[in-house]
Length: 428
Image 1 (cartoon, helix red, strand yellow):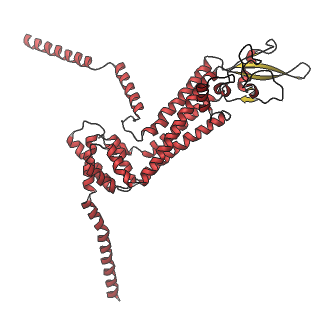
Image 2: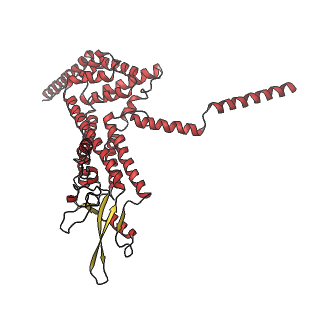
């Protein structure tokens, strides 16, 4: 009995040690959550979904990842600045009659203005006769440039970020996880040899039976790429309209200003996003007459706006040029069959060049596009085997078999027609 008791105690101690070792080898929950978070961020940067599959190209990802992030980050920055500080601070000569809070609110919800004829004047003390570029004494008939965009900047930037995500969202819905179902986890490098062979056989069989059915798949992707091009160009002109026609030439003017020097007049940034403006508040006096209170307003948010839109100008211009060139290349690649072999060989470097040439020449355009998407995601060794089996299926022997099928069908139809005619003659 004593021996059995000692044996039971030793077994319990061993089980307890095993539990402790297992608990020590498993990372704590907080570290596991952090590792998963960093893995999600890594997939986001690389342009992959939760399953690690890329359904588009790098330029497509610049539209819905980086560009959307820039717009959302700019909108968030401006909203935070508005919450922690006054977006506009105005000063006038009679604060006893009208409080500054009333003037600030009025000038924020309406608009402020600058004087174009004073933008080229010097504001340097003591030679200046104006308070700031575009701000000074003026007559009622002088031209005024009103600035009412500043209260809408954060909302417009947010909507523009959403607009750049829409093409990806449409393509994701249209794609319907077809690549994920075809890959069957073959994008993972380490896969059992038998499982890989079975999955490759299934994929080749499917591609063989569905040959020629992916034209609409390519068409939808090209339409989403065209939507990206139209989106970036449209946003450039929308922004120019939003800023009163000051955005199209904003980038070159700012660059020229930094290169040639400041001069005495206002900089393009101060002209488009003035830091000091004027605002007129109309008050009804005791006799019923309308009195105008002239105030000067400081616009601190324009310090951020001028930098944000300078970055946006250069980024949108670069993205527009790259998108137009990429779409042009897409059209050329679709129409030039001779480019298929070098395009596929650039993606599938481990594949046999003869298999690549055989498959590229025999696949329809839509199926070839699907194959290039598979090449981007599939493991190199698995894709080499896929190309070998697909070339065997689509090779000359298979082509000869497929070529005899219409002839056999025609012969069978002729025999059936002759039999029907003979039967009809016998009945008569």
